[in-house]
Length: 302
Ligand SMILES: [Zn+2]
Ligand SMILES: [Zn+2]
Image 1 (cartoon, rainbow, N blue to C red):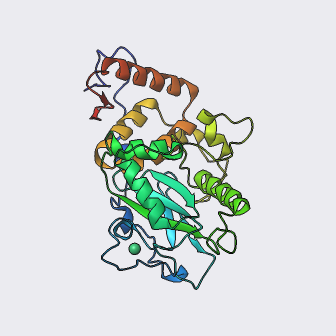
Image 2 (image 1 turned 180 degrees about the vertical axis):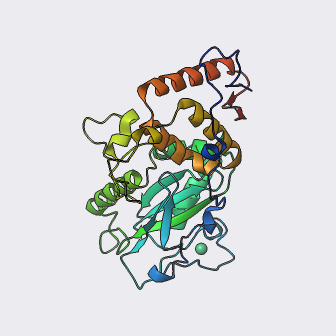
Image 3 (image 1 turned 90 degrees about the horizontal axis):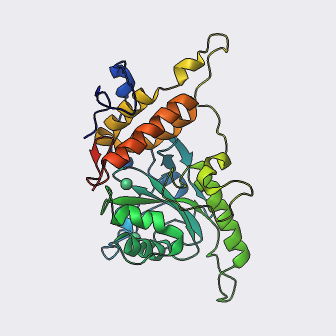
């Protein structure tokens, strides 16, 4: 296990200035289902209550809201066929899968019956050969720390109709393109694209934005809190040192893994270049030191 505070650590000269209140967050809800998602009553989402529905409905959360773990925010779900009920037989929709262990998320879309599409995901997630579009999702549940972890599914948007052309025609391709654009919109809004979440990439990558800088595509969101007056606002307080970041991340990875995603996203974008370089040095050192025992940040991953 690496000791980042050791005087023998040659990568960084950390001092012991980590404050306990910076490490331990105030509130924590471990179970995604206990978040304030609503019962789905307002938009008429329901489970089918059939004993034969063994794969989908036990993991289905009928809800009025989805929660983004990367943002710590809620977004309302939409039923464009209201008052028609949304359930496991619905199709032509956009859905969200959430890992129950780390709360990383995946946005998907389908014109198939959602429970049928979900069973295909389940097969891939258990290690069967995957479709090229959901490699991260399948790897997440078939290897590493979340292998075989439970997961939940919610319907973000239910569209009108079944997504097919009239008179038993095939899939409506124009509608399919629209749904994929809306899927991209949700991937960006909820920050579910790798490395922020479990989506591999956008359907339509934006020109000039490389895969590894996908964060540049993220739409800005209204502020949750009003900012203090500029004259008294201290930017240096927002900027985290690599030392505090590592200590806090180690704590979250052991005790509150679902909060790690937001910490990484927010902290890295607020860190000074010097601190980012120090962090990169620490990670590179850790990886090469611990290549054979699969630990990083003091956590055993395999
Ligand atoms: Zn069902
Ligand atoms: Zn997970």
